Length: 432
Image 1 (cartoon, rainbow, N blue to C red):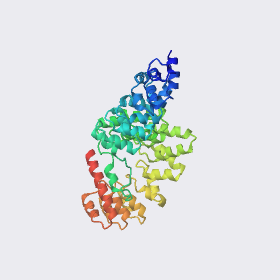
Image 2 (image 1 turned 45 degrees about the horizontal axis):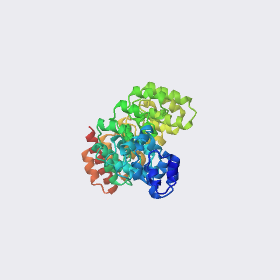
Image 3 (image 1 turned 120 degrees about the horizontal axis):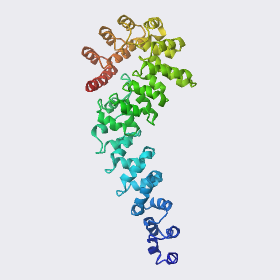
Image 4 (image 1 turned 120 degrees about the vertical axis):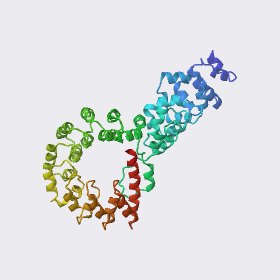
C-alpha cells in the first residue's frame, strides 16, 4: 500500500513521515528533494547508515528523531564509532545531548580531533569526568580551554593551565614568564586524586608529585601512558613494597632502578634480571641508574665499577653510597672530577680542594653540591667565570648575604637566575 502511495508526488511527503515506512522506500524518497531528506532524517525507521549520512547535513532534524534515544541505549559507543565530521556537526548545536555524547566518547575521547574536544571543553553541561580528561589532554589549547570551566576545582584549573617545566635555572634562553606557569607548589591530596582520574597530563602531574598517596602511585605505575608510568615508578614516594610488586607487572625496570626508595632486595632482583636480558639499550639504562642510586647495594656498585664503562663510572662518582676507597681513587682521575664534585658524601677537605680547581666545569658543579661549606660557596659567588656565579645564584638554599652579593653582580644573566631561584625558594617554603 505504502509503495503505491509513494509513487504519488502529492502523497510522498505523508508516506515519508509514516514511522512504519519501509527503509527501502525511505532511501528512494530522500532523493526527491532537500526537504524530503529532512523528513527522512526524522523518521525512526530510517536505517542507521542513512541517518549518519543525512544527519551530518541536517543535524537539527537528526536530533529530533525519537529513535536516537533507543540507539544510544542499545549501543553505548554509538557516538564513539560515528564519523568525526558528523559528531562535530552535532556538537555545534546547543541542543546536542552533551552528557550522552561524553559518556560514549570516554574510552576514545583524547584521540578525537580539536573540532570535537573544544566544544566539549567549553560547554556548561559537560560532566566533570569528561572535563578531567580534557584538562589532562597533552594538547595545550584543549587543556587551556577546559581549565576555564567553572565545574573544575580552582586548584585543578591552575594545574591544567600550567607548563610542567623541568629546566635548568641557569638557562637564560628560557623566557622568564614560563616560570610563572609551573604547576602550583603544593597540591592537596584531594586534587592529586582528581588528577589521577584525569587525562594523561593530569595523571603525569599526580605521578610526579611526592604528595600523591602510595596506593594512587602504585595504580599510576600501571598506567597505559608510558610517560605517566615511568614517572610514577621513579617517584620516591612509591613504597618499597609496591616497587617490589612492580617487578612482576612492569617492564620498566630501569625506572625501578632509578628510585631511591627501592629496597636492596628489589635492586638486587633488578640487577639479576638485567643480567639475563638481551636488549643492550635496556641493559645500559638500568645499569646506569643503578650506578647512581644511593640505595644500590655495595656489591652491585663494585660489580659496576669492574665493568669500566665510562657512563657507569660517572654515575658511581656521584653516588653518595659509593665505597670510600673508590671515591678516593676517583679523586686522582682528572676525567671524572667534574662528576665527582657533585657527590654530597665527599669529605669537606676534598670538596674545598675541588672548588678551587682550575677547571671551570669542576667549579661550576661544585656550586651545586649541597654539602659545600659556606666559605667555599662564598668564594665561588665571587668567581671570575659568570657561569660559576650563575650556578651559585641558582641554589634554593643560598644564604641571604650571598643573595645580596649576587643581586649586585654586574652580569645581568646572574641576576636573572637569582630572581628565578627566589621564586623557587618561595615555592619550597610553601611546601613545608
